[in-house]
Length: 160
Image (cartoon, rainbow, N blue to C red; front, side, top):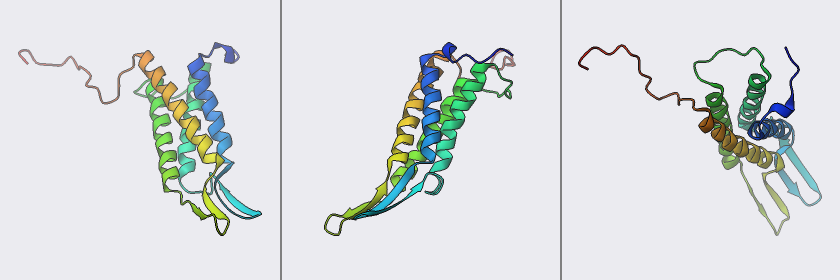
């Protein structure tokens, strides 16, 4: 097997891979936090609920695309790689959006405390949206069929 050459990746492939790296790093950053005066506390993506699953789907989409582009032996699926990368990107981003919307937030300027989403979830959202947009572009240019499209079987009886 030849060595993997990052220079052979398209710009879209690089954005998808880069978004996966950002999502991987962001899982370890604070996703939600609370602060009161000089004191603060936060939770990483793994500790803040189900959002880590979405982040891992974003990372997985990038890893799968890089394995396909490097010529690695990956399992054969009934759909092409563009459909799989797009699906994982969209589902992962949707899970992170749902987690972001369900995070409690608030605060009081008078007492000087606040709580809510933090930098890690925002970076994961940006990475997921960017990856989903470039995966959609890749899917459109690939010519692959959507999974729910009717495929002609060729077994139609005459007169039908």
